[in-house]
Image (cartoon, rainbow, N blue to C red; front, top):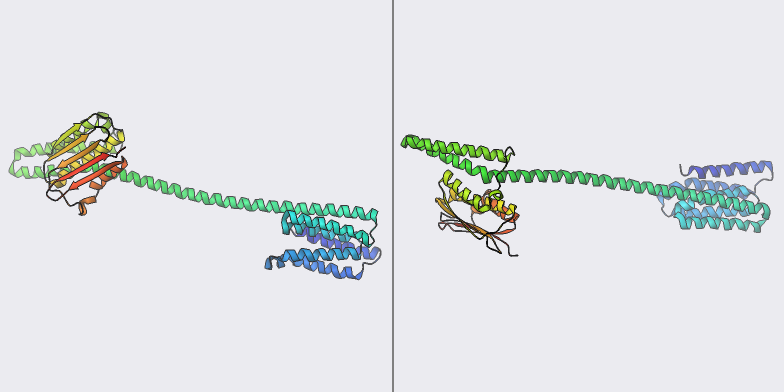
Length: 381
């Protein structure tokens, strides 16, 4: 479509030239040779430009030379100056603003030279001014088309960028949702391990003790069943707390010292583990720190019940400034720190993870037959 105007102007020049030859003096023969050459080059330009990117420069030079030659051969045929109009459009289209409009200026200068070849001043000046104005108008139209095409391409690029950013945002959102879901699952599994797993373990021990007591000491079996019933209520309460049906107990509500003493009482009642709690110093720790320290102590005592083979443990909480610490000792069977027990399941791995969450240093000392010592301590300020 952008070439249609140039083609129509050329056809109009041909028609007017043919009419001029019939109405008045015939056009010189060279004009009828150069006009078809101009048209052939005009119509072949798009195909040649696609094959040879530098062709527009040669095209503009040849076509300008043909038009100037025809104007100087027949200076009184002002219709021939219209051939500069498609050239003006193409010059701006090919070379953009600066060079394109410079070519339009050169076309005007070339038309001024027609006065040297017999063009009358009065009529010729009007023709030169009108043709220059038409050339400038056509160049401006080409400039507008180029700017419009440039804006269209920029809009397409922006649209493509927006679509790509939208897809990336959707992917990031999906990844964030998946990550949040995975973190929530991990948090829930860790909470289940820290709270419910030990209760279920104690229930299993109570069932086994009741089964043995039925045959050997029937009068004691009732005590184990009563303990089992209490553990069942505790397990149900922990499940309700994890699912949000009832408020969860938080160590900061009663203080870490009170929470550790309550934990010692629970371990004694449920698992017959005697826990000595020692607290020195007075200092208020942030709630997340208290919660994680409580869970670390809880998991360490769970490990004592399951693996140490003893019924005594000691918990020491130091709150002196500047570095607080929590320690859990037992004199059980111990284990090899380089063995598979080092980060087995959620046990010691959960303790290490909670220590990282509150940015405390973790130290585990254990040797086979020499017990285990777990210590978490504030980093130096």
